[in-house]
Length: 462
Image (cartoon, rainbow, N blue to C red; front, side, top):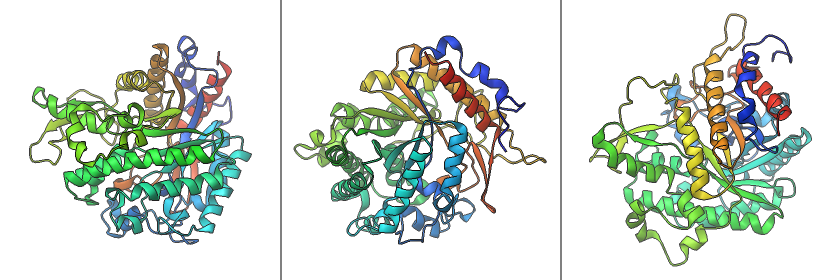
């Protein structure tokens, strides 16, 4: 159970200091507090109601995910979404960012749509709205239909048309109720680690197909923006980028870190928002750019979605496909239990840089703390370390706003513990603990902390 308002609880005693009055004044009156999830990570029901396979279903069948986990059940959100929306209501969030599963709507990725899949998101969106929460719909969070991957996936330029048709289907079906759309979540991550470095060994293609993939995803973004804009009156469209500093492990690694930073942080937002690829990768991209492509990519956007966790340390490696790999982390830097850096100052600086470079309102769409949470003897999850992390990062956000960055929202990753990709179910990011054997939901101490933070922030809004 979540402690009642005013009751003693592990999260509540830090709320007063989470938002400092002087800094809170920098946040807009219409600042949005939310939570984020993604379809494959929570829905389950992977073989129900006509859903097709995604690349992550196929990868799970190979048994290469930690503990041989799969997304077959996940959090069973497909059947339990009313309970999860109830959790959001108790938190008091104003918005919920979720994704739709491409293979649930189009089992083969194209062609005839699946009415049962479309109807699921009708029910979900209607329930979100009935709860007084705004739905923010992301078209793509890494679940390419396997049928399309079989014919090249993102390395096939035909993917631009496939994705545009998918976007049109979503717009036509849900555009009467949804106005906030994101085209992609973290394109740099699903391209670098699936196409270039072979992360998870899902794909060991060449650097050539990696660059082809980057360009096709950018073209697909532009095509989807046009499809959404043409069909949804009053739509507010953006894309969600993972941006975090790439730092050299040693002084000899400066160039490698710069190159990593260009691919990680600029390969997608630069052409999408500025109309050009970064100088350091321009030559590599030229073979794939056809006349008019950059104009097709550079479509008007309404907001910039930022995902941020912590910096990465990079070292040069001439044998690596891109000339770099992850390096040693300097001693003395705090880390999360899963080894990610805790540097709220980097979050502050990234917010300022993104707001300045791209000139769009910024919404933080993911920020969170991965750990190995376990209930105590009484069944409670007192995740004080997550509360400390989130407190520090919210303060860093306030500092960026005070410095003039146009930041309009903050969404925590994630509402629920869920399927964490190659890590399976061993890593937990949720404000809510999931007992995967029973699917019981237990709000953690951080749930109460965030609920009280939202209440405090809204009460003190200028």
